[in-house]
Image 1 (cartoon, rainbow, N blue to C red):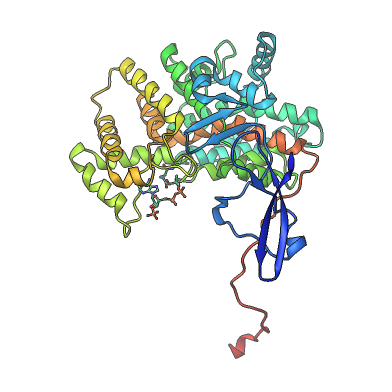
Image 2 (cartoon, rainbow, N blue to C red):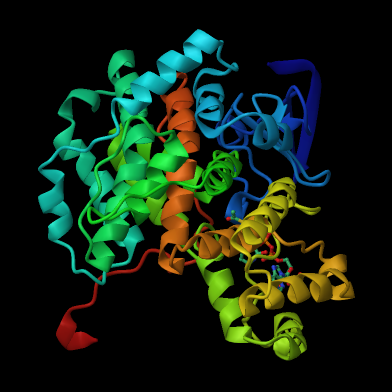
Length: 431
Ligand code: ACO
């Protein structure tokens, strides 16, 4: 993959060195600086990794300028329209769309792993009832390594495969249990006769006292939310999973690290933060005040659900999500909901404001997903757990790709040290 025809020349002081360049199948060329310190005794400095490729990957490609997202080459809008979540899981994990038999076999394997170890119920009961479901998920997913010892040996490809299937299959069960626990309702066991999304909706909203029928439009919308969040290249939580597992940590511990990272409001927590912001704005007449705050350099307030580190054009997932939001709200007949009215007007005003246009700040996927999830009846605290369960396939696929790489190295960034230089210890009585 290193392209021998191209090199980059770096000159500083009296030193000039040639650095090899690598060409991706699509996207900008990459300067390979892995030998830079050895050859020239300097590091590069790139906080936030805005200009640094951390790995070679064949899974997902994003063109932020064009607003394009491809999984194994397939555009996300085509996958969201024509495919479904478990098929996209197969694609991300194994690299190709499955044949009908492969898909049936994959769905069978996932479906047969949806239950969690019965002893895990006790683990849930150790949490306070008012715990945030993400706090519960970080704990419970990390604890899976204590329940499934037979899939923690990462050097064994079979165990890696079993761990992958277990994570994809059990994450909806764990997220639904975290929800049921916080509202004080009994856990609902998974039902293997339902598809992945319908099963999740049922585990969240059914109660033993009455029948529960999943509406196919809501199930389709749920599946689309899962699909649109399935993977997103080397984002913060995926990089966290890669870094954590580069030490050889087991997959459950590594995915728990990814969940912890996703929780932050600049990442997966943005959908919850966005809905809370819409409620705080409250009425359409207050929108200009909040837009003014978002533009004020002296105010830390940002419009949640706007902007993206990579997309400097419309987030392609947001387009599909917006359409889905319209369908769900239409079905549920709640188009005059005040939060929704604020959302629609905020979107319009921000898109017409030169500040947002110049900085290329567009609504991201979280702006619309929160609206759909609220309409479905999920509390805001469940928004990020739903993102976590959807992204599990991305984390698992990226983890599997990394572990299978014979050139795997433990991740170890360097630093630009600006602290004290060497000095001698002073006894406490002399300070
Ligand atoms: N509202 C107002 N101004 C913003 C916003 C926003 N939402 N986002 C960025 N800006 C401004 C910044 O103030 C900055 O202005 P400056 O150049 O005058 O200093 C400029 O746009 C660039 O912002 P950065 O923070 O440098 O952009 P970065 O790419 O690092 O940040 C991020 C991306 C974190 C997503 C940011 O846009 C943000 O905080 N958005 C709100 C949170 C959010 O919606 N996150 C969801 C991300 S999508 C996901 O995780 C699925």
